[in-house]
Length: 230
Image (cartoon, rainbow, N blue to C red; front, side, top):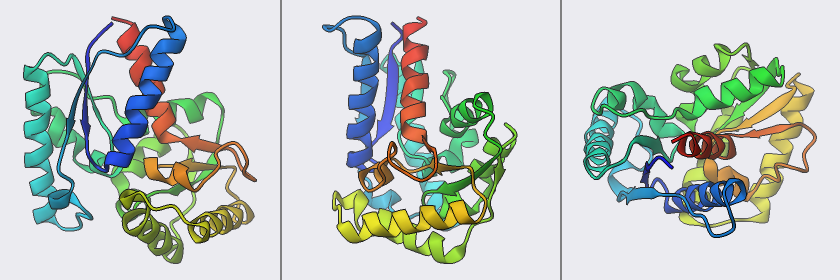
């Protein structure tokens, strides 16, 4: 199998999910005793938490870029950034290494296109929901995304950063997400794109009024397939 590098720590909750899911997928495809050859660098999230300005994103490029280079130097043949929001700097990171970085939105778009999903609502952090870096890659696969509702943006962003990334799960958060998803269906969405790993803590991806595309699950599936091709 190919060796994969994971840039994690954003948050540790997310990184744990990536590690577990990738290993289960490899085990399922190979054998009960198989595990994934992974190199993991779990970064300190404090200087990267809730980045919102150019200075912060430049800092993120420096921190994640150095991490990517260290992982490549340690023998990684490909990379995963274990955070949807940090794909905002994907293009700059890709220029800093000579190995491929598997893009979460591209892989999600491929799956949605294969399932002929035409309309969806995107849920994640403020950057993911409102900026073009994530949305345009889904649109490129023929998915029409509902415009972001700023009240929903503020609510979901707050739940992610103030609760889920700290490992806190509440019934209020579960109810809030269920209400938002119901409203998205009423607004015409055919599906939900769950574009934040931690949101799976409060959204049952198998028991909703709409189909849910879990970007983390899709990202991990693409990673496992890439590793097994080696």
